[in-house]
Image 1 (cartoon, rainbow, N blue to C red):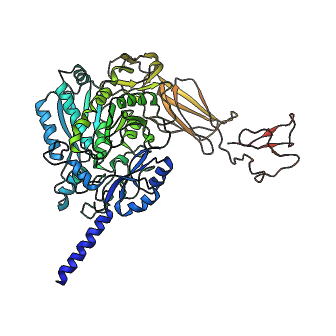
Image 2: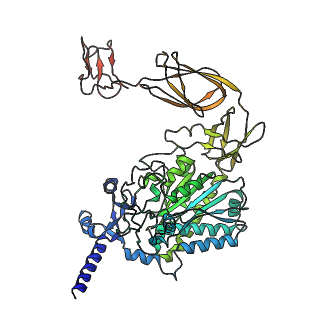
Length: 627
C-alpha cells in the first residue's frame, strides 16, 4: 500500500512538472518593436511578428497569467492539443511522415524517369547515432534527399538551377508538403503546360523536401509538437531530451547554423534555446549537406519554405536596415511572388527584406545570397505552424503560381552569356562585374562564370550598364549592355591571354613620402614588402585585373581591385590618428600657450573647434583635429 502511494505521488509530481512546462501559442496584439526587442533579449520563442500588429510567441502555460497581467489583451492562438488535432489522422490526406514522403518521391521517379532523379545528399544525426548502436535512435535512420527535376535529367547539361527547400524547422511540416506539391506540379505539367515545359527544358529544379527528417519525426509522431531543432545530442547522454516542449537541451536550429553573419542577433549560445546556433557554422550534417549541394552548381534563385506569417522575405536579415546590392530586383521578384499568394483571410502575402520580420543571423537565405549570389527567399506560409490537415491541399495549391514566377525570372531582365578563351575556345571561370551594383558596401560574393561551360547569369533591373569581365591571366574587357523587360540580353565574351609584364608599385604617405615595409598582397601571389623608397617590383605577372590589399601598422589599409598593365602604380596610405579630439569637452587633452582656445563660431562637426584667438574674427583661423 505504501509503495502504491509513493508511486501515485511520483506520478502526480511528474505530471505536474509536464503540465507546468506545457506551452501554448499566444498573440499580443498591437505589439511594437520595443516589445519584440524585450522578448528577443529574454530568449523567448518568437513565432511571428508584424510591427504594430502583433507579436506571437510560444509560451509556458505556467507563466501565462503573469504575462496576461501585463498584456490583458493577450489571446491564445493554439494549444498543444489543437496542433496535434491539426496534424489529422492517417485517414485525412495532409501531412506525410518520412516513409510517406520517400514512397511518394520514389513513385514520381518511377513514373517520370526522364524528368526525375533522386540523390541522397546526407543524413541527420539520428542515422549516425543509430549506427553507433545507441538504442534511442534506431527509428531515426533518415537520409536527406534532393530531387533533380529537368528534361533529360540524367545528363549534366548547360542549364541554370533553382531550388525549393522544406523543413529547416521541425514544427513546420507544411513546408515539406509544398515541396512535394511542386514536384508533382512540374512532372504532371511537362509536355502539357507550355510554361512548365519551357522551365524544365531550360533549367534544373532541385527540391529538398525534408532537410530536418529527425526533428520532423518528433513532430509527426507527436513526441513534441513544438519541436523546432534537429536532434543533435548536445549533452552526450544518448537520449533525445525534449521534455521542455520545444526547448529541450538537445538539437540545433538549422536556420541559425549557416556561416554568413553566424552567432549574432536572434541566435543563442544556449543549447536549451529553440534558436541555438550550434558549436560553429555548418556544425550540423543537414546544413553541411545543403551547402555541398548549392556549391556544386550555379543556382540562380530559390525558396526556403517556413511557417508562419504570410511573408515573402529576401536578404539581408542579419541586422536592421541592411539593403543588399541587388535590392531592386530582389524586392521586385518578392513583390511579384507575394501578390500571387492568397492569405488565409483577405489579401495577399507581404513582401519584405528579411529584417522586416525580425533580424536573424546565420540564416540560409543570407548565406545563399551572400556567398553564392543566389536570389534567395524565405516564404513564411499560412497563419499558424501546423494548419489543419484538411486545409493543406488548398494552401499548397496557392503557392504553385509563385514557384512558377520564380522559375520564369530568368527569361527577362537577365544578362547571360559564356566566357571562353579566345584562342582555344575553352570555358573560363571569370568575374562578371556590373558597375553601379557590384562593389557595394555590404559584402556579396562576386558573380562568376562556371568552369564547365563558361556560362554566367545576372538578374538586373531594366537599364544600361557597363559590365567588366575579367579572369586571371587574361586581359579584361568592358562592355555596355542594355537590359530590357521582355527577354534576355546575351553577351558572349572571348578573352585574350594576357602578356607577361613587370609591375612597379610604390607606397607613399599623404604628402608623397615613401613608406617602407608596407605589405602588398596580390590575389594568388605571396606577399611583397616595399623597400626604403616605397617600391616593390612584381616580375613576370600576367597583365589583368587583380584584387590587391596594402597594409602598414599605423596606417589605414587599402583593399581594391586594380588593373596591372605595366605602368607604375602609386598608393597613398593615410596615417591613423594618435588622438582624436572634437573639443566638445574643452582643452583637457592639450597644453596651450598664447591665445589658443575653444570657439563655437565654426566647426567641421559637433559644436566646437580650436581657434588662435577665440572668439575669432573673420581673419583668424580655426582648427578641429579629426581622424
